[in-house]
Image 1 (spheres, rainbow, N blue to C red):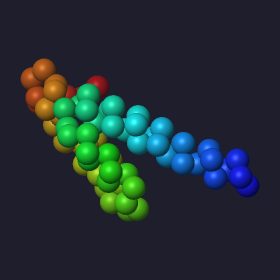
Image 2: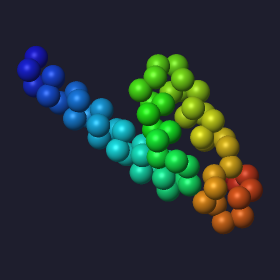
Image 3: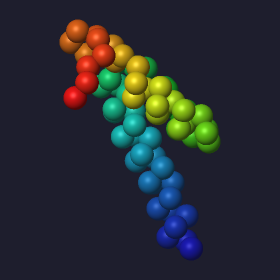
Image 4: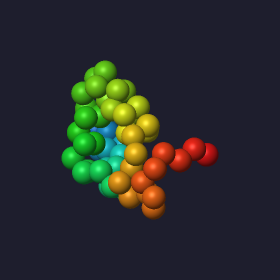
Length: 65
């Protein structure tokens, strides 16, 4: 149980750091990553970021793969 209480906060911080890096590379403010800590809103915001136009794309238009 003690190991879980040490590993869980480290895992949460690691996931927040990864999300911060992704959000910054997309051109958004990195503080948006704090939304991941709010249940339900985090799922909604992942969809919003996924389907919005990213400021750092070369032509800033919707591109499909």
